[in-house]
Image (cartoon, rainbow over the protein chains, first blue to last red):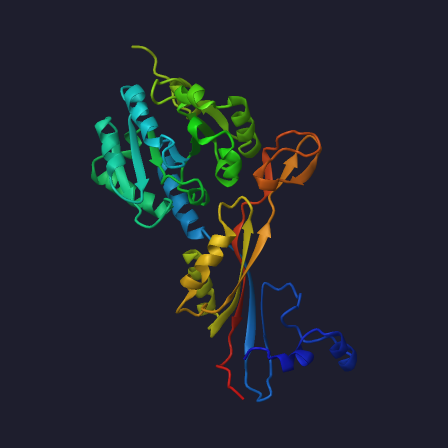
Length: 274
Length: 115
């Protein structure tokens, strides 16, 4: 039974109770015994047993996702394939960048992509047309990918005859969203956060949690910089403030500028001429 | 929020709770989770479970970074890791990415008898 107001004088730590009874109050509600778990019963007017239990847990909310992510990570590690988790707003050019990767790197690197969207398999079809092996994850209501979804996509990759160990790079294109995906580890070896010059220099300051977890920040659509009056130095400063560990690469999927720098930032070998 | 519900119900079941009275979450300012969004979803997600009607308490953890130049921690307001004293950019986040079920308060007794 819950403590009723009339019970409180007897069972809570109130000064007059302590003075009147001359002993410490029973531990309840505000007790600081420090035990990870403690239960204490409150006798009631009718002497019926009742108990509050306070559990100190400190348990990670995403522990299930983290366990699946760890399984993905060990699988990627065993296959020796670098895996990128690519995050950006909708329309920053994630798919266009992947198409450019396919065009520029496809001859020298075996690349596959797992693509997340709420609906349609348009992106996967675009990437297949560009020559990439691509699997679409349609999330329905979910605005982010979770490690378990990637696990299922890996099974689809395998049933399509794509051997992880034979890949040079796997790109997971997350759902276009700069909020929720940042909390979900997918097991990637590198997190890449992208913003386009058309989105404004202060985008990193608006979404610090996502940028903070970035290993690489890609500034895309740099061919449009002049047209939109993009203040490059201001953008770089904002990125440094909220993504202090990230390497910054500036690219244009349209012209191909910056693609060699991106290849290096992802830790891939630049192909030597035959 | 489903993760909150599932973990809370699991623990409540282990303790044979009659109901969950309070769920306390610990959320860092750089966890990537909006406390307001959690509050919005809470009642809907808990409806029809032992957690229906439970109070939701959110302990907010302010992100803190360590300045290697000044050898001190400072609050990284809005995620900005620039030391307010010397202007150096910190690469070391001390806290702020927490996303935890901090504690649960359970009622484990019999159904209350109305007087």
